[in-house]
Length: 60
View (cartoon, rainbow, N blue to C red):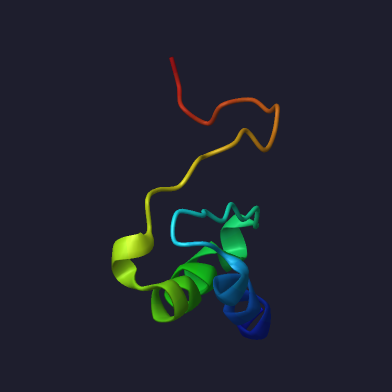
């Protein structure tokens, strides 16, 4: 993953952006790698997505 991100950085323009879809299990590793390659100040945010249709564990 690291080598792909390094190539992506070289291909991006100064005003470009990168959007990455990844599972929750790997998200933290990706954040660390991205901060190392693109710089911590480049991170904008995380977009959550609905991953299941299930019964809520929260009682009403």
